[in-house]
Image (cartoon, rainbow, N blue to C red; front, top):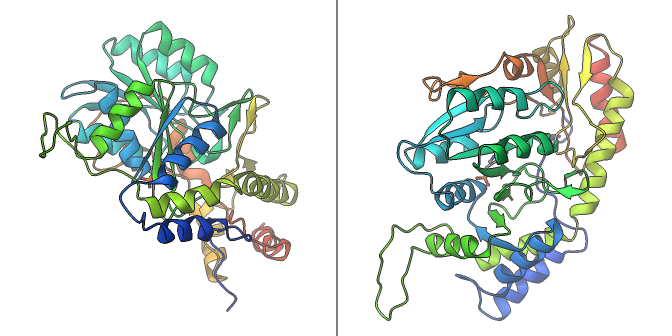
Length: 369
Ligand SMILES: *Cc1c(COP(=O)(O)O)cnc(C)c1O
């Protein structure tokens, strides 16, 4: 059988940039904890996305957790959260003993529906924070969402874990709200093997997040703690991989876009097939090419047929309000996220895929129609 084709797997630079930075860390014995790579990775990422300040952390989940803490979210507070996402968006709300209220998707963006958000504010006027997700590298409609959130004077956290390299009207996703979060998990558009970044134009808050992330050690010769601490910092080795990966981000985005266009050209027009939305204001990174099916061919047929050929694919995220763990929390919406989950499939979007492999995938899928 041919080698497995993945949905999205790590893709180190052909030039070996990552190894150079890791080697530098070895040469200077800056293996851990912090060091040049961490400082530079923070600066380079902040510059890339156009924001003042960034804190390199152990994961995107840790970044969301510290964003909620920085927003002052505490026990009993309500946090609005996109329902169509990975559980890592919502879990930190529970870590803070707060209460999530899940918001439906807009068919036009697959992301948070501004109308449902507005409705949620009617029902819950007292809200501490809103977490907006940019799914699969598609941007949410940030102008409308920010307008609503500003009107209600609420902290906005953008979960841009999947959208590094995505721009909304020319501005990078993750830089509209008070806080933005990126992930460098193994399947993301660039990876450090595992890691995350919290970004903000509020430098004081980012400095505070770094403090919490290193066990909240007060200024003192002995170990002194006046606040609860976390072990959430990124290591200098991991940051070295990140610096190397950042150099090839644009190349990865170009390839992801090529994959999307390849699929769209070959598959769009098949009965019941609809590709993920590409709005005129969106410049997506196309992290995972996805589509919905409303004809006789179901997502499971495609996933089974691909799996037989050792090719990975996956359903769209199962909405949080339908998850056994989260179903007790309120949901505002009309079943759009649910129908995307039921009808959607993510196609293999690995940047190492050749044209031949892409053609194999599209031929297998076309064979089902
Ligand atoms: C990957 C991901 C995260 C979590 O990032 P980790 O670095 O794996 O902790 C959060 N939200 C979304 C939408 C993600 O896809």
